[in-house]
Amino acid sequence: MIGLRFRHASTILYFILRWQVTGTGELLRDIMRHWSSGVSVVSASHQGQRQGMTVSSFTSLSLSPPLILIALARGKQTEVLAMQSGCLGVSILEADQQSLAARFADPASEGLDRFAGLETFTLATGSLLLTGCFAWLDCRIEETYQAGTHRLILARLADGGSQSAGRPLIYFDQSYGSFSAGGEPTSPKRYKGPDR
Image (cartoon, rainbow, N blue to C red; front, side, top):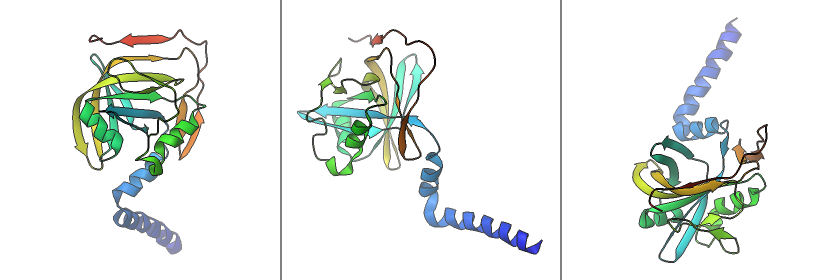
């Protein structure tokens, strides 16, 4: 009985010490590995410069007005260009686009043109969008907030669309996968903002 209590107490002590030693950032990273999310490439361009980065910290926030929320690492070229231009593009990746997710996430390519050789298109704001993606959003930045190592960007949808069928790329526990919903594919959807 004493041995069991000791083991139980040592387990609790381990987690308390782990919390204090590694800090809440590492603990949060470990926990969030168990949260699955879609995968997108956020892009921005300004005065001839362009860049994009893989982002999973992205969600819809409001339908009226149509707002999204994105977290971008502060100081990265994509974040800097988005702040300078006041707009950004979001390409939601298809299940077979894992190589694009890896390309835009590679820290070694931060100063390089990650869009080189890729087929892109633009809509209302001129932000680059990747051809062949599952869905895409063209947005104007409304508000920004500094949050630790990241900048939270609240952006309004100006234009966008989606494929009629396909499977989104999913990120879970440091791995890519896909998800397929049942039922028949729907017709392609298109949104045009009020300022277009």
